[in-house]
Image (cartoon, rainbow over all chains, first blue to last red; front, side, top):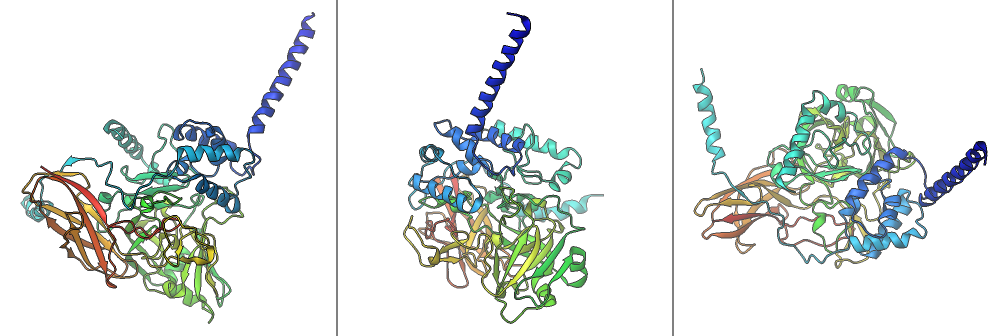
Length: 154
Length: 404
């Protein structure tokens, strides 16, 4: 095989490979209005990787749910599968979320598994108390002393 | 979070703030989801490092009770509840406010300078509390930012009375409501979408304390809190106090802007069982916020020695009404002790309360605070009536104390 021919075949293989890779990528990116710059979306996705727990469906959540709002909003909420579906429908109806197609089921499974409600009763005990020794200082008394101290200055 | 991480957090922000001018430069230029490299999950500049970041896109930040101890809340401890993205490059020199609508006799546009020249300026200390403050306690959980207790503040606001502007424009006889529009950008960046546009009945709009404000605590309003111009309507859900204000509409019906309908800032007209489905037509708009109080001193988790008395203090407020009494309990509501209660410095400001408690035995205690308003309403000890979006949780505030 001549050197030029080899180069040509290499080029073809490379081209087809790249095209395949691009099409594979784009097929996982939903059809959406591109008002938010790609660079920003990329950054949100990096943050979401860190904030969201691992699991089947995480990728679909990242691809569809963190364009408009922080992954922190997802992680601080808890709801049943039905509750999460309600939020998705509300976002689709009013906030410009696109149809999720076959990803919807995967996304719902992920959200319902990872962010399900716990029964908190009518009021939970105080939690996350950071104990500290309360200083035995009487600030009111110190404040009364302050003018006297200031007067003593030359 | 461990202590080391906290230290790094604080040191990081402190060193950022010391780079001259950074705070101002960034504060006037906060882009969407602004982040500093190496400081992910951090608060925007100008907020106390102890504030809790609930959401960074859009910004939602709350205080902790002990941060709210000041009579007038400093801007760095003022919560942030943004529905969309901060207005892009707002400038007070070129900013305008337009008044129009089907019930306006004329359409007028004012620059901020013109507002200052044309109308008398007033200052009031006004309580702004997010309607969803306390949402995190509802069961079943309600969707949205999971506020605990810190989405409330009472700052000093300076501006002109909305009623003076409305008089200048002229109201038609059928005027019943006002609505606002601001320059915040919808999260989708779709310019055709309005982020939030709420309002109040004319009677509330015409109150002396309803301000179009350009100053907060005698300084420029932080951009994240609405610079250069915002509505401040004390005692009602914070969402009626529109930020980055550029337009007010005078309506002949209840304003129908974004987040005036559905579950937004509305509760079931009749109380419902937890988790119930409520039809749209059975939801009513929240008006005055309910009676509530906070223990701002000491910070929860205080360890004291037996025999020492403990000073306790905080604030109480009740929407459009006066607070007439505050009580504390150290035995889970078994008995209640009356506190000293100050008058409000002006209508719709919060009221300082204080007392001293002592503990006869060693052990774990909780101090609970309960305010009562002029209508005889007081705070429940458990979470009050469930509603779909988890609004109006005014359950009494609790702090933990260990006596040894």
